[in-house]
Each structure stands twice: as C-alpha cells, then as structure tokens.
Image (cartoon, rainbow, N blue to C red):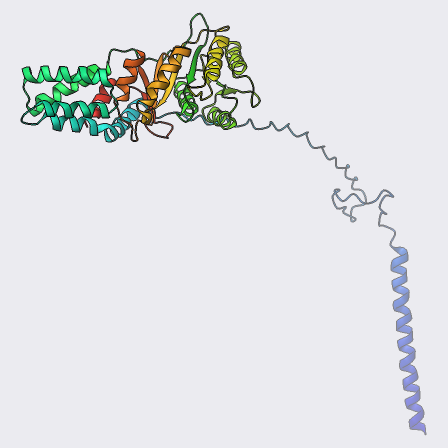
Length: 396
C-alpha cells in the first residue's frame, strides 16, 4: 500500500508542474501582446504601397516624404499614313520596243517580200512571171493602182540595172519604200496652241481596237510626262467605259464618263472642259464603234466633233482599222474620212494574218499617213509606224 501511495504522489506532482508551466507560458505571451506599444498604426487612409519600408529601430528618424507620381505626358498625335501613290504603268524604252516590234513584224509580213524576191530572181522574167508578181501584190492588199505602178517601175529598173540577186533585193527595197512613202509626217498632234489642250478624236468600227488604242496612247504620253484626260464617249457600251476606266487607273489618267446612254457629245464636251480647267496637255476621246452604213450614227459622230470644237480645235482624228479586214477596211476609211476629216491611221492586228499592203492602199486612198501600228495584245505592242522598218520587215 505504501508503494502505491508513493506513485500517486509522484503523478500528482508531475501534473502540478505541467499546469504551472502552461500558466507561465500563457502569461508571458499575453504580456508581449499588451506591451508592444512601439509599433505605429497605419493612417486611416490605408497603406501607401509606393512608400519606402520604415526602420522601426530608429524612433527619431524623420518620416519619408510622400512619393509623387508624375502624370504621363499626353501621347503625340499619330499622323495617318499617306496612301501610297499608285504605281504608274510606263512603257519600256522606245529602242527596245522597236527591236521587238521589228522582229514580230518580220515574222508576220515576210511572206510578201520572200514571194516577190523568188519571182524576181528567176532566170527569165517573162510576161507570165510579171503577171505572177502582180497577183502577189494584189493578194497582199496593196491595191490596183499602186500594184500597177510598182510593177512598171520594177520592170524598167531591172531591165536597166540587171537582175542579179543583190540587185533585185536592193531595187525591190527602194521601190517598196517609195510606195510606203517615208516622207509623210507621222507625228501625232497631241498639243494645242495658245494654251489649249490637244484634242485627239479616235474613231473606227466596233472590234477594231479603239478603246485599247486610246489606253495605250495615254500610257505613252504619260511616260513623256504629259498630263492627259480621257473621255469615254462610247456611252452605249458599258464594257468600253469600264475598259477605259481600267486603263485610267493603270496609267494614272482621269477618265470623264457619264451614265450609260448619255449623249456622247456631252461627254466629249465635258472631257475638254475638264482638261482646260486643269491645264491638261492632251484629251483623248474614245467614240462608239459606228457602222459605216448607219447614216444616223455617222451624223452623230460628226456632232461629237462639232461640239468639241466649241471649246478647242480637234488637233488629231485617228482612224483605227483592223489590218486583217483588208480591202473592207478601205470602205470604212472612205466613209469615216468624209464625216470627220481623218488625219492619221492606226493599223491594229498587223502581227496576225494581216496583209501588209493595206498600209500602202489606205495611205493612197485617204492621202493621210499610217501613224501607229499595233502588233499584239500587250501594253507595249503599239508603236509609231516606221516606213523603213516596215519595208525591211516585208523583205524578211
């Protein structure tokens, strides 16, 4: 029993020690919380997270001045980017165009010259041979009168000067060149007088290539730094107006147009008025493809010219002919010339199955020069007509 009493006393003693220790620990912790009076409470406005951290170990340290934040400077206004200038489509150099055009012309027109040279180089130039030569020339659309003239001159010269191969070629070249007439003035009258714009009226039947020709001429003039306005006076064919508008965007030229079916003369008048107001160098007027057997339409074309001339003289009337139409083109040429006094001819599609003799025939018929030739669909396939280059191409 004594042993058991000792264990009870030992356990009770241990419990008392544990209770006393726990009370002491709780008391010390409470004293630390109640006596911690050095800490400064934050101001009622909240904590400034931009202020530097305080050093609580120095009671006499001055409080840090409040940090000020400079307002952001107003952003500089952003200038809107100017729209990029449209890229103007300019033709390749005249020299390179001429080389390419001569090559193409030689390929398409060389058959006539080769056929003539083969006939003229025969050992004996009898009447049958001369008839063959005449037939060859007529088949090339040179025309009856020019053919007879050329045959007579060739007979005379070859009889006197000999018929060797070199002589034949030289004589044929000289006579063909004379027939094409290198002395004609083939310059385009694209400038007016006394500050007036030059006015170029472009006429011809549907399908000859008038609208394309107008666009290509504008492209060439722009490459020479001339200011140009185009008038879309083919008002009854929406496709022609849109085609001209596309050319205008391509070469940076203003196009004056009206609603579909507008009086063509009023569009032409407005184009010239716009050009005069803006000091433009040249006005190019695209007209409808009048059928030569429609008297009313041809009268309307005459009206377009008269209305234009109330503001400025027409300096050039270009008749666009499809070279593949041959002698049918001669009928068109005569009728248009009677109505609007044609001053120059544009022969298109001379690179295809065209017979080069049409150059001679149309010049003889109208007494006006071929000024431009088209040798393809490309933008650079329109070039000034060169009589000597054409003659060389005929000979291959």
